[in-house]
Length: 169
Image (cartoon, rainbow, N blue to C red; front, side):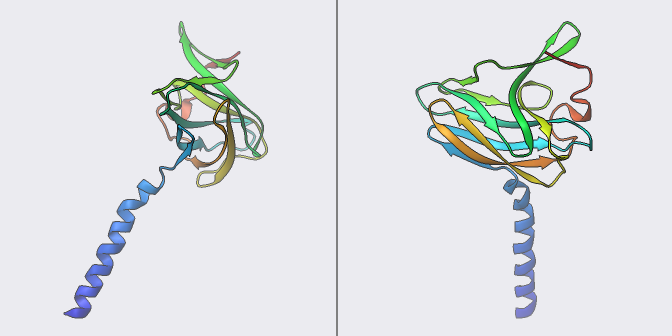
């Protein structure tokens, strides 16, 4: 009976670890009064010159701050972009002067909606399961290094066709 109970306890512990595993995918970073939540990118296909990265930024402070620059060794350049519908066409534009995060504001970057990060001039395809480094630079809080989890291309709100029919300006 003792062996059975030990084995049952071991199975229960393993099940608890497995149940908690998806929670470990959510990763956050803190920089001063800013919280950066779950940085991730979508997997790309060979020959695809650019990819998208997403995360949330929450300002828990009493003063605004601004995301002014990003960099990653997997891309020649990175840009903060916004997308908006103009008539029947989705238009994507670089955000000039950085992205302001007001006190108490949370900006959630996600596929097919609002803000996102463009990784331009990829050195190689982004593969699901990989982790890539990225440095975020804020006007007041300074720099923070984050790990970007590369997820399946279908991850996020808009699915695999996120970039189809978009016009870049």
